[in-house]
Length: 90
Image (cartoon, rainbow, N blue to C red):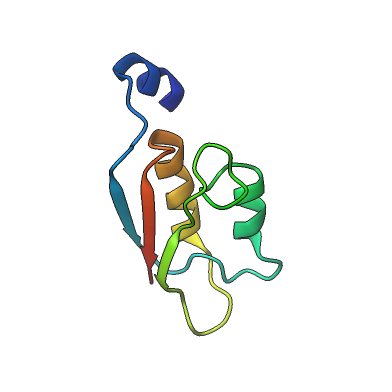
């Protein structure tokens, strides 16, 4: 996507922007893959050096494991706007 090229060319990173994602699920796959994504800086969170603001998960899929498509969507948003505040709801 060349998100880094666009961010530097327009000098934007998503500060003071909130992006909400609605999808099937965020972190229902066993093993807490969202925590791994935060450690790898694919998502914002406490251990992410570019954005320590946790994803605001209003409600995740309540019926067991799902595809976690919403987390994948949020990874793309984070690539484009790494300093944006992110919210999710199933």
